Every structure is written in C-alpha cells, then in structure tokens.
Image 1: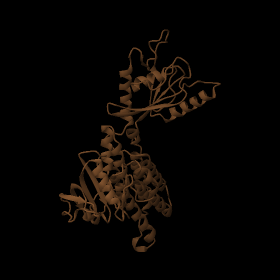
Image 2: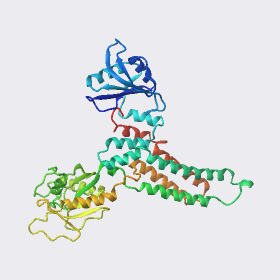
Image 3: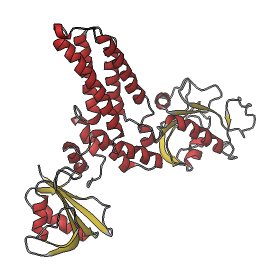
Image 4: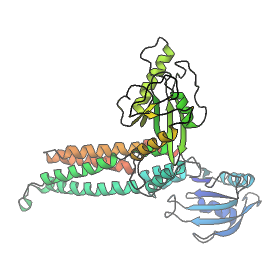
Amino acid sequence: MDTIFAVSSGAPPAAIAVLRLSGALAFAAAQQMIGALPPARRAALRILRDPADGDVLDRALVLCFPGPHTATGEDLVEFHLHGGRAVVRAVERVLAAMPGLRAAEAGEFTRRALLHGRLDLSEAEGLGDLLMAETEAQRRVAVRNAGGAVRRHADAWAERLLGLAARIEAELDHGDEDDVAGDDPLPALRIEAGALARDIATVASHPPVERLRDGLRVVLGGPPNAGKSTLFNALAEREAAIVSPIAGTTRDRIEISIVREGIAWLLVDTAGLADTTSDPIEAIGVARARAALTEADLLLWLGDDPPPPQPASLWIHARADAIGRAAPHPDQIVLSVREGRGIDLLWRRMADIAADLLPPPDMVALNARQRTWCSAAAEALARAAVEGDPLLFAEELRAARRAIDAITGRAGVEDVLDALFGRFCIGK
C-alpha cells in the first residue's frame, strides 16, 4: 500500500499548513528531508531539505506518530509548514518524487482509519456529516455519531443476538443428549428475539439524520395562481422564482436551501395543480408537482380546499389582501406577502412542526443506509420470534447478525465506501 500525503489543514495561503504523511514509508521519507527524527509524539523544529540537492524548503515543526495507535492506524508524520502556496507546493513536489509516495485521494486518510479498525463505518459517516455541518443541530448529532453513538447501539444489539445464537446452537448441538435434557428453550428465545426486534425497530423509526443534513423538504403546493411563488420568494427572502398573474408561469420545481434560526430548510416551489391542461409542458410540470408532494416532509398548501392527506401540512390562506377574497377557514394561516402579514406566524408554525420531524441532539439519528440494515435486522428477528423450527430460528438470527454487522461496516459495505469518502476533503 502506497504512503500518502496531503495538507490536512485549510487550503493555503494560511498561517500554518499541516501536511500529513501516512504509511509504511512515512518515517523514511521524513528522515530523508530532516535527518534525525524527533521522539515519538513530540514536536521538534527541523529544517526541511530537498534530498536531491540539499535545497532548503522550509523550517517547520515535525511530529512522528508510530502506528498502529494513530489516526490512520499507520505510521504518520506531520509537517507544520509555513502556509504559503509556494512552500506547500515545494514540499509536495519533493514527496511526490520519492518512490512509493503519492498524493492522497479524497477521504483516503479516513478510509485507511476504517480499514485498520481505528473507527467503524458509522463513525466515518458521522465524521462526513460533521465536515458538512452548517447548523448547531447538525454539528451536535454528527459529533455523537462520529463518537460512536450508532456503533454502541449496534454492539449492544450484537451482544444480545450472540447470546440468543449461543443458546439455540447449544440446543441444536446437544439438545438430544440425556444429560442436558430439559424444558424446550425455544419459547423463551422467541420472546427475547421479539423484544430485540422491537428495540431495533424503535431506533430505526427515529427521525432520520438526512433531515438535519439536507434540510427539511418543504413543498409549496396548490392550484395555479394561488400565490405559491410569491410566498416562496418571501420565505427565501429573494426573487428566486418568477412571479406573474399568468396561470402556469411556474413549469418545473424550483428548489432553494436556507438556514433559519439553526434549522436547515429545502424550499420547493411547484407548478399549479391544474385538473386538465392541453399544454404538454405544463402537464409535465403538474406531474412533477404531484411527485414533489409525495416527497415532502412538510406541505404548505395554498388551495382554498383542505390540503390532501399528508403526514405534516399547513393550510395557508394566501393573498389575504386581494379584493373579493373569500373569508379564511378557521384552520388556515392568514397570509399577505404584500402587507407582510402572517409570515412570522408561518415560520413559527413551521418551527413547531420541525421540532417533531428533526432528531433531538440526545437521540441516535440514523442515515438511510443504517436504517435499511436496522429494518432488515428487526424483520429477521420478528420472523424468528414466530418460528417454531430451531434450525430456521437459528438461520434468522444469522440474517439479523449480518445486517447488524453491515451497520458498522463489519460486512458487506464495500460498495458504499467510494460514495462516502468522495464527500471528504483531500487531506481528511
């Protein structure tokens, strides 16, 4: 495996640039540039030179961390360089010329930490979310997951599962022997399997981490000319959508991400839901609008009729200032963008709903991949809870164990690694 290097601090120019080397040749490469290495885990000032001609590259602090007790599980060296672009490029040029060394790919340091058991897949995913965090809630949940919150749950489930498996395997191996004959243990094991299935399903049902990371998807829906784009612009606080009195002006979904009072929102403006249209382009827009409604975390409905069935929705009486406008329904939020009436109330009602849709910072929040495997484990255990054949019971336990192992990356996750670490910066 090649020894890799990259700047792990901010992009130069900066006051300091921390350039890391990780791999079997890290110490040898550093020794070629600075001579005697400093004691392990102690910073020392050294002159960095080009081994080819002795040219001075920089005066820098150098730290050496012997593996496996390092961030990557490998020998690791840090050069704390002056942060000018020319300095960093010169050191990188010298390192790249050494046999067995190359520039790191995106997320490769963290990927090596995963491969060497310094963290598991759920912690790596939490770290990726932490790098992308823009709000305090995102940061707090990501810190918990990066610190092993998901792994601790998975380990606890695995321990209970192993206890069940050991007892059923003992029954299968020795249950017919006279000296171990006794009551059938399967009924009690089925009860325990059912309890574990419910515990896992409860965690899988928690609000997903994607709502924190990507923002709550708020879809504005209603008939043509209901004021959706006007409200969309008011919520976004800029002219993001074209507004006109001509029906069908909005032909496609328009999305914009905003953060307000620590909550990330993804606002989606849609075409008016016309019952019929002879315009094929408008028909496509209407179809996409209907699809957007099914994907919404929260629907803002601007129609005069009650909103369609939706887990979370707010019924809005828009254009309240319009002459001849019908009286609002008691359940509607009365709103006039022109007069600035109702916007603050709408935001408050949206925040109240968000409190139930977003994972609290003290609760484990799973991503889509983790929820899929949790559900698979819970379903296997639920089947085991009603299984009367000990052999099939044991097989369902094995299926549940494979699913739990996949949560933390112990099995069957190679296909997700490229996508995960592609989100990381080069030096992470």
